[in-house]
Length: 336
Ligand code: AHG
Ligand code: MN
Ligand code: MN
Ligand code: MN
Image (cartoon, rainbow, N blue to C red; front, side, top):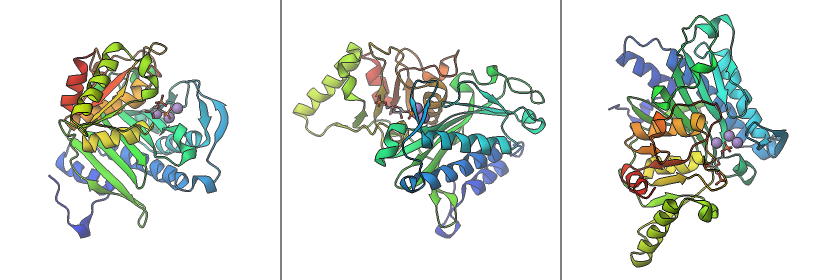
């Protein structure tokens, strides 16, 4: 358990260096990687908080590999993350929601790096123009190919269990960076006065149960019968036990899952008749959160299987997602 007093609020860099002291064999490469991601996050945050004034609202006039209309802030966030990771010395390449293929940083120094990063540079894009919280999501893997040569596609198609770290940034009322390794999940709040992410939420754990469920009700009649049955059972229970459950849905995965991680609850993005695989992407949305929730004591499934066990075959493949408090995920799984 970390002890810090008010005058010694630990910054993200101090925290990762502290971790190095605990694990002498650590090379510091992961610390550098997290610092690079934190730098990109600060730059994205600086634009997001004054979006309307710096011309980053609205469409970029592009359509991405997902078939989505790309927002200007999608493009900016993608460029910031690629630039920060390419300039660093800890990343051999990236896979991004906004890039059709993986991006291999094929230069001498990057080829020596042992990590690759998958990210959703800007999550919740439909909310940008309404000034509703958006985020960034990332997952870090050790390469399966030997450092020294360029990374390959195979380095990016690993099951989520192989992540060495994962996290997200929430551009909300405050800007927070939350990341986890197998040793725990910790939250850092950006202090604009010093331009540093500072430890504000040490040792985050997900409550084993909760009373909030989070789903897009607009698709109700598109969902599988088990999902509809689970929802109506909750609503029936609420009818005779008022306020037992509540429903919250922001439409930004990072905002919905940050609330679920801290307060407990269940987030559902099921498959539908039209999209049996659901909407959310396995590699850079579901796997990072599944890793964080499991480290924090929660669960994450696709319905039939544990998210982290899914062996990916494509960079942008999708999966249904049921994630949150252990008891709520276990319960909804019994309906599926
Ligand atoms: P992105 O903006 O990165 O494309 O992701 C949007 C995702 C996710 O943030 C959210 O949970 C989901 O889309 C909302 O989808 P619906 O609007 O279909 O509910
Ligand atoms: Mn998108
Ligand atoms: Mn997203
Ligand atoms: Mn996105």
